Image 1: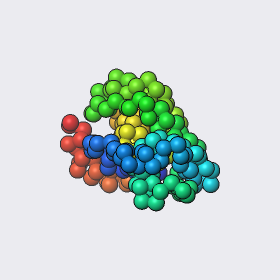
Image 2 (image 1 turned 120 degrees about the vertical axis):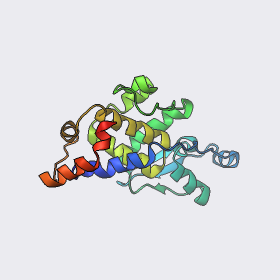
Image 3 (image 1 turned 45 degrees about the vertical axis):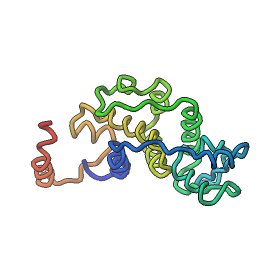
Length: 195
């Protein structure tokens, strides 16, 4: 495909998307200790979000930090910008009471709703590409599997049924291969096109 910011984002998707891990349980002891308290999440830009522990601890990273250090201090999230953290919190608030359905894999359609994705989730990822990629990176960093699955499924739906040139155009990927290198890559990966 060539090089771009998309490459590291796609790597985050492909590294975790097909894996099935159970959602982390929120231990009863931690739940009781946190009752009534709000966690303070600090974005990379210094913005503080006060969030219910049940919402924030949908992130395995945050849950582990709370389990290790308690809830007295702000939880720094240096890899998540304010706007993205706000979107992640919106996702977690919604799914606190509405657990997401398993997304059918491989995707049978470019329409996520045909793949078991709810209307709310489908609208949630109907966003600009750059925001989508930042959400993927945040979901990976925060270890929120259902959000990572959703955002990667959105990228997969954008790729599904497209050839290499269409994908390059979709994601603004510059082809930095020489004609010889491209021919070699196509030959080595011919099995992909035959599948």
